[in-house]
Image (cartoon, rainbow, N blue to C red):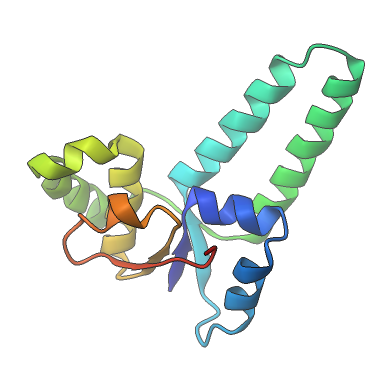
Amino acid sequence: MHILDTDTLTHLHAGHPNVIRNLKKLDDPDVRITIITKIELLRGRSEFLIKAADRNQLVRAQKLFDRTEELLSQIPVLPIDENSAIKFEALKNIKNLRKIGRKDILIASVSLAHRAVLVTRNIRHFRQVPDLAIANWVD
């Protein structure tokens, strides 16, 4: 299983050729995102819509929101389950990981719980997580 981090899903959504190429050549077609990524994307699109300054921005924001919802409907979402919560409890107590932030620790926890490869451009942060398999499809 491969889990797309928020940055990678954003690049996929934008049609980044490296992400598309890597996705197509996967032997394992089980590609998912975490509930954290879903929340981050919808929060960003919601804020853009709410803060739109004029009718052009409102219409554009609504179209982007709709496109994002369509994308999210096509990718399975992994929730925070009991195993993810156990991994989170262990990771949040590792002093060096406090710098990477709660959302990233939650995403790492879900990835570890499912023994998945986390596909992210943010290698520097996630490299610090013990036993986490990571890949970068953007660069």
